[in-house]
Length: 281
Ligand SMILES: NC(=O)c1ccc[n+]([C@@H]2O[C@H](COP(=O)([O-])OP(=O)(O)OC[C@H]3O[C@@H](n4cnc5c(N)ncnc54)[C@H](OP(=O)(O)O)[C@@H]3O)[C@@H](O)[C@H]2O)c1
Image 1: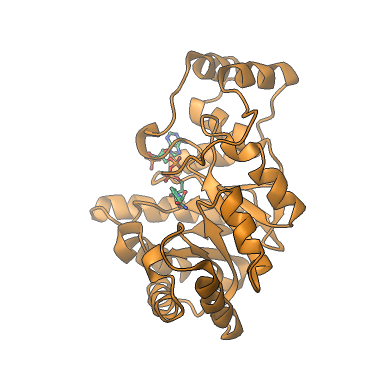
Image 2 (image 1 turned 30 degrees about the horizontal axis):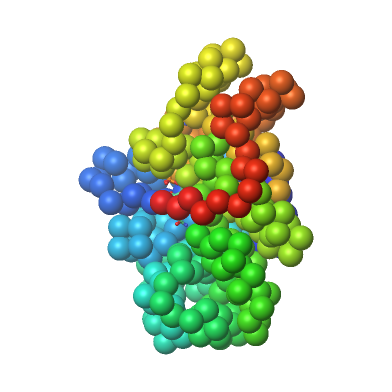
């Protein structure tokens, strides 16, 4: 396992994604629980969930798993809908999430994406939840550079600890200015959907990935995850419902690339040369 400083704490460089977890039948649930436990038993200490995932079903499943672990050893991240972003609704959503997760605090609470509520109100509501001891820190998700700068200029806006955006080899837009800006402002970055989401829906697998994976005797998924993790400062949060895949993802942490391999990948999936519209799912 490799660790990074994330949200001012020592954190595994992969966390556990939970979108669609807890939505299936008993057999699937058993497999999901085993996969999450395998990850936690092998050094992962961060879980990413949201009130949106299965309308609470994912948080419920995570809450069940957490009962077998020391809460303080883990970083728990959840998110609220943009239409719950007013102070009163934030408090209501948070308390419901805490109940489902069977815990009395979150390490991070994120605005899932930007909506109609003025950011100032949302920051005010989140700060109140920090003061009440219900969350340690707060952050945002799917914010572009313009959103981040606007947030940062608001009262207490600089207390935003984290931004979570789509980041995989086919969606590199954040590299141009979001990652450098966040680094400069000491804001942690979470990259979501390292494999392009369920069934790779949001990522085109080009032949070079298969060829290189074969040469390196790894799977394409391992290559994709290792590529995201080549950036030592960020947290990637792959989702899997299978112990076998979790094991494979953990092994990807130790995969390195030679300079010429990275160049080949850059040719197939070029780094952005200017700011583009943020990719989101
Ligand atoms: N903030 C946001 O707006 C946002 C948006 C999207 C996602 N997220 C977060 O990011 C997490 C990850 O993103 P994601 O769920 O969209 O997708 P992802 O992690 O990119 O991909 C998940 C898919 O990859 C498969 N997979 C995982 N490991 C594998 C392996 N070693 N070999 C083969 N297949 C493998 C999974 O299947 P199996 O389950 O069968 O392994 C699943 O189909 C989410 O769960 C969520 O927590 C956040």
